[in-house]
Length: 131
Image (cartoon, rainbow, N blue to C red; front, top):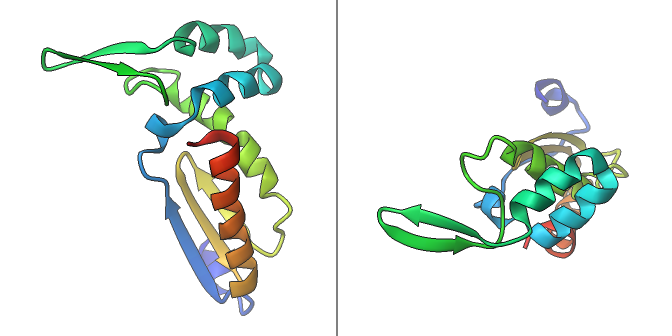
């Protein structure tokens, strides 16, 4: 990304950090998508996340019906698979140089392309995976 930032054609850089992303992944969409994207992993994911989880915090019980569970060894993998439809939808933005890591993204390019890229992220995340 450092090289992209120094290019003459790069007018701006956007840094994105999705708020509470791991807890916000739409489980229904995730479980549907995982059956298509990674069927070998789907049985485990469905068994773990098809029903609300009971979480106990300081003696208080709360139910968890969205997202992945903090501390779950599979949470990162499930989140990555859950966000693949969004990332695949952004592949057509060849004028925006992108780097993604979990719920963090960086985009560099000209202002017009970055605006279109950002608006696509917002639209797709609302409709595809993240609620």
